[in-house]
Length: 233
Image 1 (cartoon, rainbow, N blue to C red):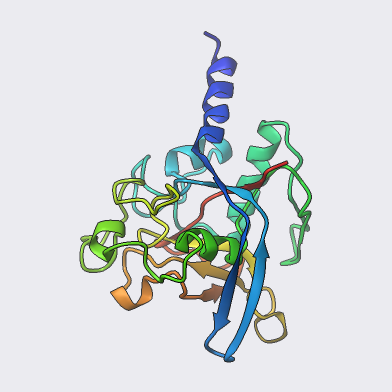
Image 2: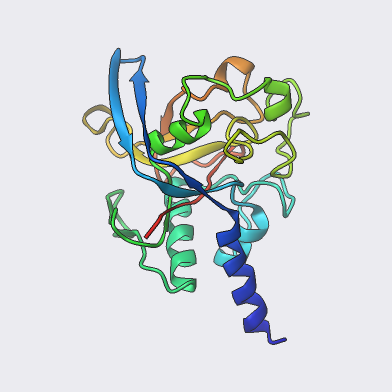
């Protein structure tokens, strides 16, 4: 079997890791400004696993992670690193890329109609984490997440803890996840939203509702990674 055929099979296997998320709606809240809003969610696809170091290397030929392990989540990646990955993966699979941007600018243009890979919005992320419920956790924290009390100061291979009822792993704990949204452009400029909690966090930080934000190009840390989403088209 040719090397190109092997690679094509490996990339096509990514589709088998996508879970179809049903349509619905989610109530979001920003405790900083005491604002609450409701978002309608169209059905979409979300990976059951965080992007691993192995997959990240196959697509980008880069190994940025501070805590090495091919089946551990990739980390120490910026928001821009994650969308570059999405664009490269889309191109490899002959899909339309979702993002365009200038190399010397923080401005990112998102084509929400493209059929390629992308980051989830924070509304999609929280809705999927909660499985359409109002629960801030989808199980006992020690059973579903790697966090400060059980991580032994490290990330762990993806998929070892219990999934939520829609079949997604590590939505809570292991590493925080980049989402596509700008946090509050009027105050924080281009800062992007992070969700989920990581291996270094206390239990109170590992909730479906917790929101953090940081700079899309300069912020890289060993408990921050991402997972990929895709429109159904």
